[in-house]
Amino acid sequence: MYRCAKCNEPIRNVNALGLQCEKCGSKIFFKERPNVKKVLKSD
Ligand SMILES: [Zn+2]
Figure: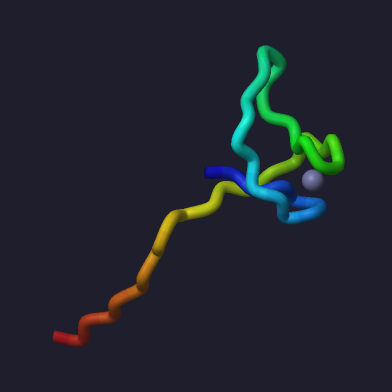
């Protein structure tokens, strides 16, 4: 799962050229980690 770095829109479509935000056309993304729960164990 990727999100647009500009408008934070989730990227769902991947075309032949790669990823592109369908909202703003940006090609800069960051990877979204799904449901990352940080559990700190101290034991
Ligand atoms: Zn965008």
